Length: 295
Image 1 (cartoon, rainbow, N blue to C red):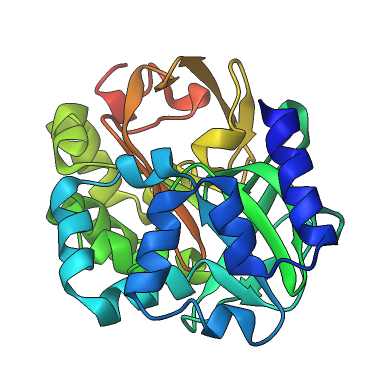
Image 2 (tube, rainbow, N blue to C red):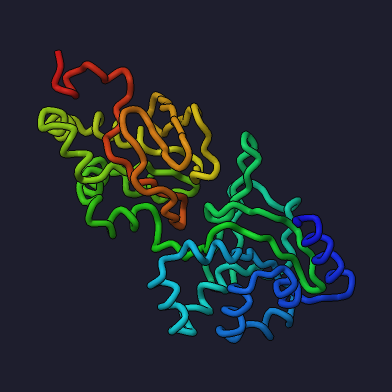
């Protein structure tokens, strides 16, 4: 089936099919209907573009109320669709890890290459098929609809009520600027995670700014690690001064790390990605120490 699809799309390219015609030939009916509804079909034939095109299944993953909202707001719909379009031709061979591309929506999208499991993502969405050529550009099919980030990692933490404790700790440790540098992953403990740490440990962190900074940076990885690029038994090196590592255990869609798990993965930020976790990570050398209320 895939070979037939690829042959059909290649034939359309040879015959001079434009981007919209290639999308129509691909059977991606949801995307085509939304492009037409947003009044973008004609614009996509007037110039050279690269489209990161969500499949029908990708649109099916969206919450029904969000899809309905987009369907009733043409401007919002057009903005989301423009976020999937880059001016010019961008092929797989042009991709590099952490490359950012300007979209027609005015915001950048980030490419990541994970060589260990042969995945390439754009804003965390897997690219399923590359380099479908049209007469005026290229189409890459992706497995998720991309939504514009709501700011930097710090903005996401500040905007989430369940991360208010983490925000106060980041501010106390003077790490706001550090978390606004580019290409970071934050494993963000929720308020409940800090509560489970215990009053003794929380008190230790409050009394020792350097220790607090070290613990917080143990939750930050200096690269953009979306879930599609993570693999079982992988060790991630963190930003704390000792460059400590922690290991991931992945079963299906479940991501375990140390003695807890990821609650919500792949929250895109303008400078990386955030994963919410249900516990506070503690480097091995502090296990059994006064930090955890032990002698």
